[in-house]
Image 1 (cartoon, one colour):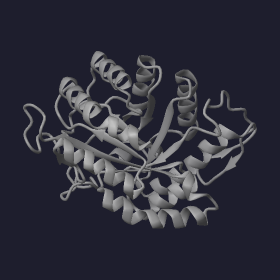
Image 2 (tube, rainbow, N blue to C red):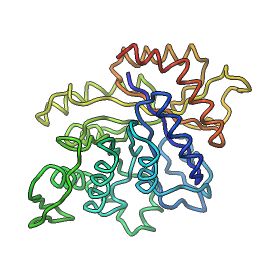
Image 3 (cartoon, rainbow, N blue to C red):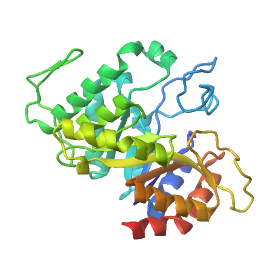
Length: 313
């Protein structure tokens, strides 16, 4: 069982460096970064992981650009894997995105995870001039483009939105046959996308039972796509809050559906349960304010939970 952590959303270069270096020293598998370009002043009722559709965090909270931050994180580390959780594919030109990921994989020594999603915030699509209604088909096509650019000597791709031929795309990623693609989302469309294009289903803000209920459909769709279900890993991202840490109060700072809010022993028990269900990887974010408190939670997780995960293999 692998455990990764999500980077806090703070424009604090030294804090981000400290967080990444500490995560690497503590032995976490990965450190991941989320993705938004702009957020609406009026808020939203479209967020898929709360009952009201309201976004979890203040809209005026700073949000660093994802690929830029991953490049900084790569320079701060040497071993830990780095990824997006998740990059909204329709927001950026697919050839440029593929080049960014390939370049980052080369410069990091093959440590990149390409976590992808279709997006949900219509206002953000409008501001970027991207058709919201086309976000699903665009994401599928962009993943096909990634695969062609990363694996073919002379890439050729003919799609609805982009036609690619007569070019070289170098350098290729270090990781072979390609950078691993982690597909986010919780819908059946996301599961079909994983089955066709993904190396991992990376769902977020859900419970372990939700994941287990959807695994038969994922296996079915993977076989229909002519692939081996054993080649798809399963990842669940949730907010984590220990109720028995010094100074902790139940529920402080945790705002997301599917959050794990409990004692240390209960978190260990949940780890065993996830492993029994077939979940291979857990990514946690810590909804507390500031780099310092996030590092404290991460250190507690590393001391009491990470050794159990390592024994599970």
